[in-house]
Amino acid sequence: MRFLMLNWRDPRNPLAGGAERVTLGYLAALARRGHEVFWFANQFADGKTEEIIDGVKIVRGGGIGTSVAKAWRWCRTQKPFDLVMDQHHGIPWFAPWWCGTRSVAFIHEVLGPIWNAFYPWPLNVIGRWQERWTHWLYRRVPFWTACQSTVDSLREHGVRDITIIPYGVDTAALPKLDEKPLTQPLRLIVVSRLAPNKRVDHAIRSLKCLLDRKIEASLKIIGAGEVEPQLRQLVEVLNLSAHVIFTGPLPEEKKDSCLQQAHFLLHTSQREGWGLNVIEANAMGTPAVVYPVKGLIESTLHNETGLVAQAETPESLADSIAGSLRSPDKYQMYRLKAWERAKTFHWDVVLPRACDWLESQARKSPSDRP
Image 1 (cartoon, rainbow, N blue to C red):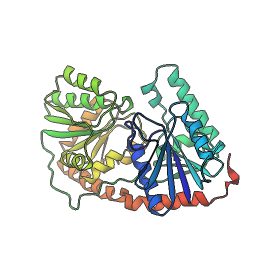
Image 2: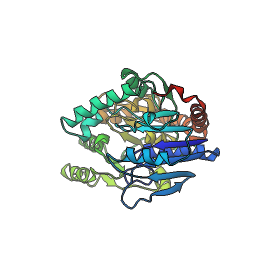
Image 3: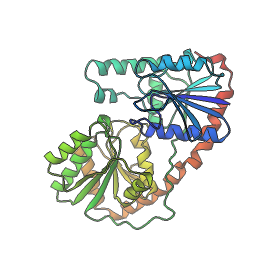
Image 4: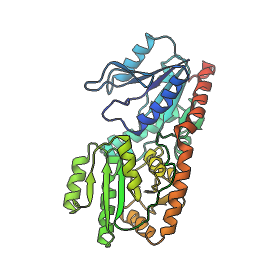
């Protein structure tokens, strides 16, 4: 069968993140099953027009405002596809109305408040309205997503057919859980694209709260992005230079080593489709402390595999971290349960179900297209 994924970014795009990693995981698995798999994405500086990554043929064309038309014209030159996957990131590709075959929508999260992080008024209001209207337009298109929070938001917008398929991770859980007593100085870590909606500044301010309470701690920030200069400036303003390390992006092996050494992963995003880095940390025997937002309250099970702060504030995050010092036995329980649960999210477990579902969609009659 022939599959096509439409996504604004591909794995080589400088702005690629977790969405592109999981997308490649699904598509590469389809390719390994013997299918022809294509991925159409926006062009970027120095990006090749075509290349193959893990058996998936990447095709690039157009940019903001032009890539949908480019994809449509390119699609017309190709042999018919059995399934087109229209990935939503605030704005979709509207593929069900031009691809001429079966289609499904793939979404990581309903952006909602994330529009406010990237755009001023009135663009943020227009973005949120457009997103709700678009979901209603797609209400008869099958959706696929990773968590119940996104399902609930889509249903509020009128979408009827939604399937949950968990994200997988390449990170193999440690063969044996190593010893890691919860002692000061606490080793905290953030693994994230440094973007406004990730609110990494909250993690930095939380570190300041801990130090003000005479709790020794350090913070390692792994990743890069547009707000890195502001974050570095904040570290200087708060006099935290001796306690914060910016590593930039790291190879997977080095990143896993840093996660294994940390006591807690911190995640302070506005909203997530799931939180891949939470599971990656769990696989390394490191629980997470997260904000009480959609996606993160599912990737971290409060008081089981980690902690969910009571509020979306640095002070509340610091409260959760400080409270764990009073219960070192509970911390070890979090580590064990997080490590065991992470094994169930490895790609080896997730991919068979994902591929079976996508193949079943490709076999369906196209008569129910909107």
